Image (tube, rainbow over all chains, first blue to last red; front, side):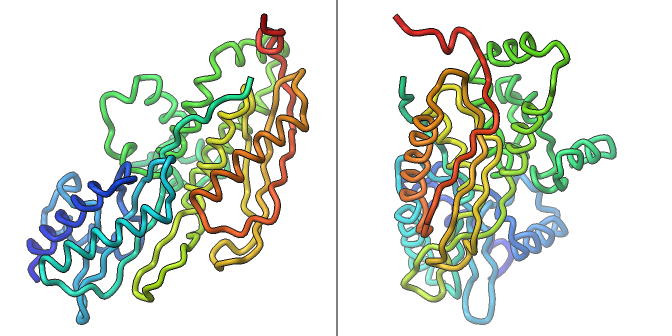
Length: 118
Length: 207
């Protein structure tokens, strides 16, 4: 998989993640692998604003995918994570790519103000 | 994205420059005051900054009345509680430990950050008028599924409110939020009301 193909796949996954019910935002992953991928992209001249926020790295056994998401407070984080997992797997299946691992993390719950008690 | 001027300010609050992705709590307050424009991607795409902005937004929502009352009450303004709230916001915005969710697939790792959970706990303060959370901690091994976890919250309340009622309301809201968004085995939610603040119009009886 070329760097461009990897970026296209990452963008497709990011789109699927954003479209999942309950997801409020996608954030930059703070893991070591994501930092390494960003450093690699920067070395190739990719501007930070053009990088997909989802990290995709190719290994011998498939791809490693990482995404950090925000969720809506009126959903359940566990349910949203599992829906995102299904959405990512659907993209990979459509593209004929084998997944080695998937790491999904809720990093922010977009809070709606609860009803105050007077 | 830090400079030499900013670093000591962050350290004064016991933070590392990476906690708010290089931003300071003062910068975030200014950004909020400016209506979050022009849009700053380094802030909007940072979970830590978003968590801090959520808390600052609620603090702003309490209005200037609260800060004015504090100032009027204490000619020698004691910055203690303001600093405590601001440093608590910044400290709690750190990502912290990763809290796992059960997954049927061994090659799938689902989780929520401790910072996101602290943000949830902080958001519960909105359920109790005038209540401010200064700091919250998750005690126990949150990285191990099923491990017993205690939640410890320091807060301040308004003079005239029933402390047990305020604490019960906050505890219920925190419990509901944690059950909705985590699989933590929460064994206790300890709430310490460490400050009582007086804001006259808030404590007057409503008609």
